[in-house]
Image 1: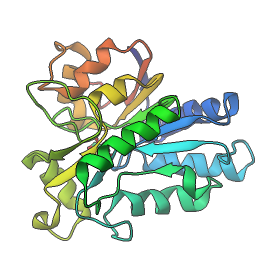
Image 2: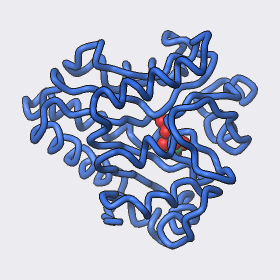
Image 3: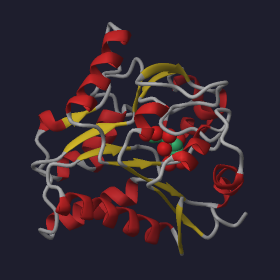
Length: 240
Ligand code: F6R
């Protein structure tokens, strides 16, 4: 694992955005794996700046988001589709049909998951995957479990994840109890991965991810087995 210590959140975002920009400049038709949540917001802001400055062009790129809540439509303000449109896609020149996010309203979950994996495969896999880190070690919505997951699947969200995400909803009871997520195998098939982690509240889990045994009960520990993972974290997150 390559670990980069940034001085603060702003520097994390700058470094992560530079990785993505470099990927797009080197390979304009790159397939990017994208995350939502609080951590990537500053990364997307910077990418929009780079795009406006003419440094990067998204017209040939493809994106696959990690996850989506089951039961939320694309127009729902808490759906990840809505988040991505607002934070990134509406501000750059990516063609709409190059954007992929699981459909939270799909009537056939098995088909939804199968088609998502098929689409990723058809693109030749993810070139660069951006990850955040959940407090319980989840990546995407791959929650602690007795074994690592395979491809895209439907998951029941843990109570701690629903509590953590309640900040985006009026109250916790509104947080969906299920989500679609790409699997650990799909994440591990990415050619390279960057994980961004900020804040003191992530120090214990980040320490386990870096120093602990590889264990599906802390899903992000699997990243120790990937040859091209870079963790970009601030001093606070790395303080343990
Ligand atoms: C979101 C995702 C999640 C988040 C994680 C951390 O697409 O995949 O795994 O990255 O829950 O969330 P934040 O960044 O809000 O702390």
